[in-house]
Length: 94
Image 1 (cartoon, helix red, strand yellow):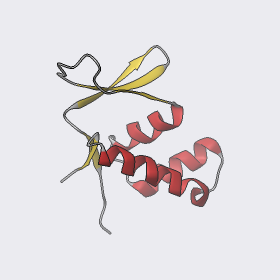
Image 2: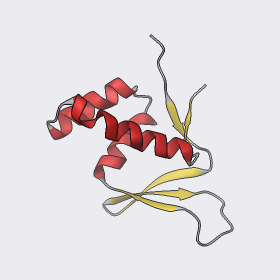
Image 3: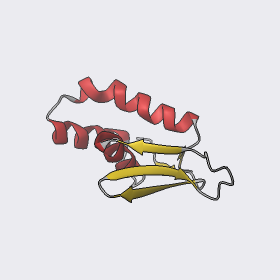
Image 4: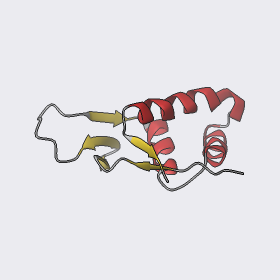
């Protein structure tokens, strides 16, 4: 089975500010650079992906955390990942 893994783009960093996780652009000269606040679900998804969890492992973690079926969350998780990939925040690990 081909195991797809993801890493955070070298242009971004994940930071915890108090109880909130924030994605910020590194070395941006623009003071209005991307600042993305993550809710607890977004943080759970991203932190597990960059910890080298596969999509199936991630779905199992989220399913257990929120007591929902994997089929119920699969589409939303895939959309979240696709959105991060399209913005070059998340990249597939080679």
